[in-house]
Structure formats: C-alpha cells, structure tokens
Length: 255
Image 1 (cartoon, rainbow, N blue to C red):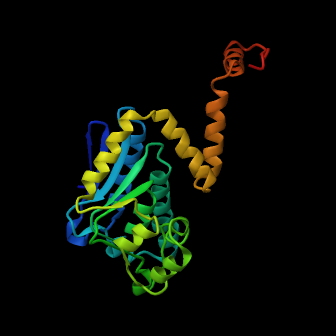
Image 2: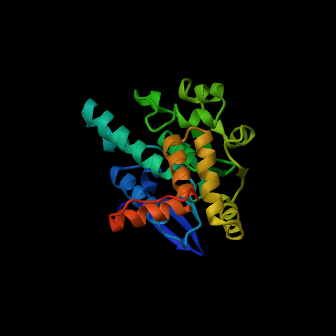
C-alpha cells in the first residue's frame, strides 16, 4: 500500500493521505503516489477539481516521516529527499486543475508546505499550523521558507519557523491563508468544487497560469505555455507544420 488513495466522483478527485498511525506523515512511497495521482488527474478531462486531505480528524499531515530520512547521508538528504519533495510539491502547485486542501486536522512541517501548494485551503476550526523543524535540528525543506512566504505575513511565518509557535485556524483565516473555517471542511470543499461545473475549464486553466506567472510560481513555464496556446490557434502554425511534413518551404500568411 502506498498510503495515498484516489477517489473520483462526479468530476471531483479526492486524494487522501492515509498513514493515520503517524498522523499522515509522508513517506517516500506516499510522495511517489501523490505525484502519480496528480499526473493522472491532470490528464483526465472528466476531472475538474482536485481535493487533497488527510485520513481521520487528528491531522491533515504531520510532515515528513522522520524514519524515512533519518539514516540518509547529508548528500542523499539534500539531493534526493529535499529535491524530490520539491519536485512533487511543484507538480501539485502547477497542476492545471484547481486544487483545494482540506486541512481537517493539524498540519505541521511538510504538511503546511503541502497545503500551501494547493490553490485554496479550507480548515477545521480546531486545527493548527506549524513549522517545527528546528525541534529536530533541521529546516523547512519543501518550500516552507519560499512559497509559504507569499501566503503568510513574514512576521507570522517567522513566529512559527523561528520560535516554534503554532498558528491557530482563526489566525490563518484572518491572514487569508485559508478561505474558510468549518466543522466539516470536506463538505465546503465539495461545494466549492461542484461550482466549477458551471465555469469554463479552459478559462480557469488559463487564469490559473496567468496568476501563477504574476506570483512567480513556475513563471517561465506559465509564460511559454500561454504563448504556445496563442500561437497554436494561428494559420501560420498550420502552414508551418504542413510544410515540415511535406518537406517544402512554408509561405506564412501572418494570420
């Protein structure tokens, strides 16, 4: 078992972290499964939204499973564990479908970083956020000092990362980190996701790319993807590709 499940109902994909004995801490297998599921969802035209949550009600995700990396050499820790985590979290952040994190319980370390890779977050009122890496002698490794700084005030992020303090759900809401608090955050997320059925999938995809470019989230790829989409609608593209296949010189129309 990978510790991650995927369920698709009525166009909404729900990815659930299932490692309840360790508060849904992330293992290598779970990270790989998460990447593969996001990739599958992005290529499924029937899916219009991705919801990410954790099993149970105690934790969304308590971060990285320390047992999974404690015996790694310094080189392997930096080169593989940290970089691989970034690769997977970036894949989630750059998914073309709208994404919602349902923070049904506490989110610590990599759990906060994972939720931060989603477009919006719905949080249980009893849940808290924290970057406790200094308690075990490490530092945030999966964008906690980078992407999260765009979502929380710098002083608040320092309060957690430097002083180890937890951020309550009500404070997270006041900072705009979460969109809404609820005793049933999954129900709210499903309601929001269902609303996408009334919207244009292409409009939301392109808008997400534009917003990411403005926020420097995968900016280079976003700009080139938008440019490629624009040029793909032109007659010049049709003429150029046809000439390539026919091994002739293209005569572009400029249209």
